Length: 132
Image (tube, rainbow, N blue to C red; front, top):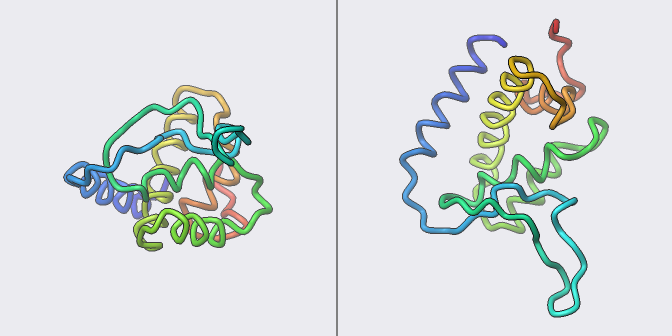
């Protein structure tokens, strides 16, 4: 992964670690963990339960999609719904995509589509072709 992307991710991760926001986060929020419910129109299941800015949850919402989706549009829609700064949500997606990409490359596994991760890391669509 290019040094520039690693540096951007490291900078934001450091910033998020210092965030003292008291909001309880789902931390694994994606369309597979949101169900139609009886008592409420929607129910989020399987939370991890972290504390911090809601911008952190933008990554799992956006990353659990297909590479052909408008990723920037998904980040913007999430930001408005969660009432968070769209730039912070975009930077959170960038940083978390970088860590997810490195984890998948190091450990193996396919938790997230590689093309989606690369698009989020590079901020482009379609993603830049990086060697495996």
